Length: 264
Image (tube, rainbow, N blue to C red; front, side, top):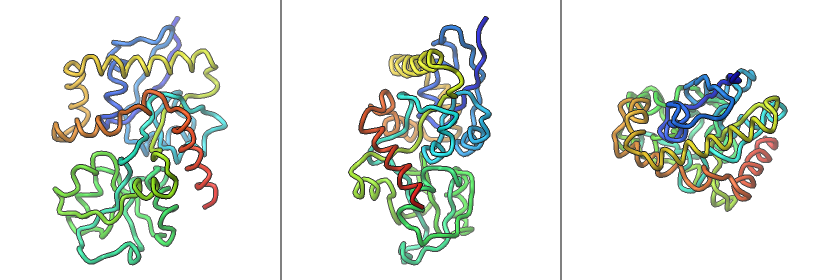
């Protein structure tokens, strides 16, 4: 009899790329049946904080709160260089020293943690779902927003300019790639099940790489109205060597982020 597990991931192209073959049962982890939970990453963070999912994508910021119950997997991470969150605004004259209030994509996102680490004077944080931030800035409902995911490619279309690249600043400060999010599994699943899940995620990524045309409609559907080139750029940036294997440098980056979080 198969063991049923919940698997959470976001509708972002890098996640649907990674999990396509598992979602569509092109890859089947032996002895396991997966119930999919596809949500915005901040919703996934909240579910994992409540220990409500067996396996899930989370922001690395959240990892520090749940390590008693979850283990970080070696596969599936969003981590790299030149891929960090951006602070953007429609105003030409404003500088970071003047910014006091920022719209953020979730309290437990890595983006918000980086903002607190790099710009501690910004204390007024307004939470908004990530895909609503740029439209709100364009409508004049806020002055400065912290954007993630595909926002790196699309913010100029909203008449916005970049104030700061938090990933770039992280890299200058630490020399490490920016750790954005990773996959965690409940420790209670046991080492053999966790190993099976990890291998299945790796096989799912490999399947999508070998069958990109087959996977594209699924990725496109979950990306909603995102332009095809933006989708591909998103995948190219966020699915990389660290996604296949976190490795020593990746683990070092995650450890550094959690150390800085504890100092706040």
